[in-house]
Length: 127
Image 1 (cartoon, rainbow, N blue to C red):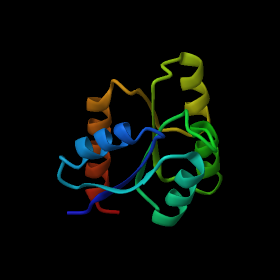
Image 2 (cartoon, rainbow, N blue to C red):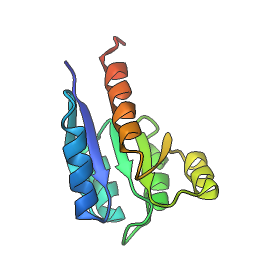
Image 3 (cartoon, rainbow, N blue to C red):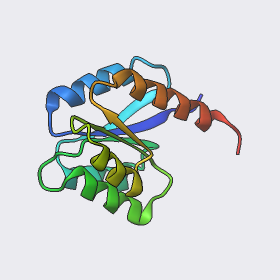
Image 4 (cartoon, rainbow, N blue to C red):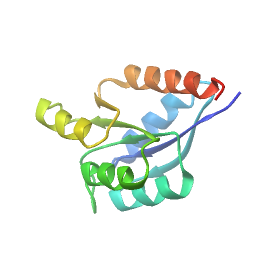
């Protein structure tokens, strides 16, 4: 079975730990890196080439929206899930138009797990 490699980028250590703990309870999901700021997030994505990135909007040094745009400059295949406390239709639209695949509130952890499970299934398909 292939693994789904995940990078988590959030300035809150507690949130990163919660997401990491939740996702790694699912067989096949592997958190390969964690970033506490936007600059580190971009570096980790380029270095580790994850299948999926969980990205907060509000981070120091570089916002999640800036990180999203930077990743999309040279990478269209990584699945990017914006997971944020900013539950705003305007911000959601900006993120989705900027290249995010999904936009979730931080209260939607179950939905994040389901997205990761589905991406893992797609990864198992031939071709």
